[in-house]
Image (cartoon, rainbow, N blue to C red; front, side):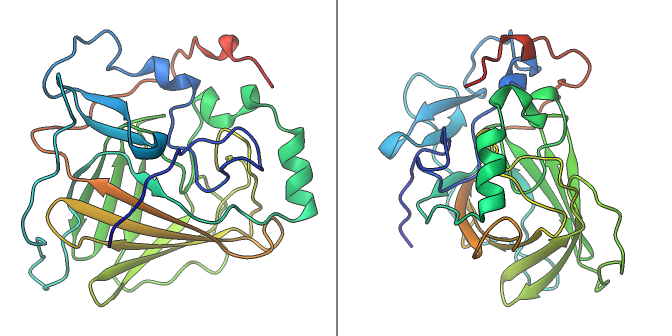
Length: 269
């Protein structure tokens, strides 16, 4: 399947509202990468086709392409999603169809109040341009995120169900099951505190997210995300992404919550 890449950040509801922001928040300045000298293995952001964000090892020329080869598999025969992945590129899709309530909330928000800019968790499925890591065993998928607050998610694949009354959290309660070679991650139990993006697209505690993860070969991870929240969106909001496998790289420590000095420089719209 050939995928086209579009810009991943939009300034308002009516402009390229196709994706959840991939660009770093102002907390970007707090990364442990800051001050490091460029090397052949340091990620950088590059302008991709159509202006999309590409993340790849630092180099004098183009980003290093992902490795080729067959899909690695667990002993069960299911695809093994383990690896370090460069932040996802988002594929063209329809903008979200908001309810009047969500439109009003969006208009009232100011980018300087973005919780992620204040070193709070990004929530699901917002991402940054930094690499992230998957560690998979038959009963659990662990997602480790370098950016924001060096956070993580757990996806339980041991057959458990969601709790009847989950405590609302930033990343929700995630359980996974296999549909052939696709890992389907079902997440509920969110709080309503995080924003979907820097523009401020909202949600409620009724938010329900379904993610479908496919690893068609060694070097690529394809993700389809379906957002359902009837109080905020009149129909499901579907986002497609693709990530490349990193080679000779490890996620780094990212410190934001201890001393975010950049927030005062944010100028509201």
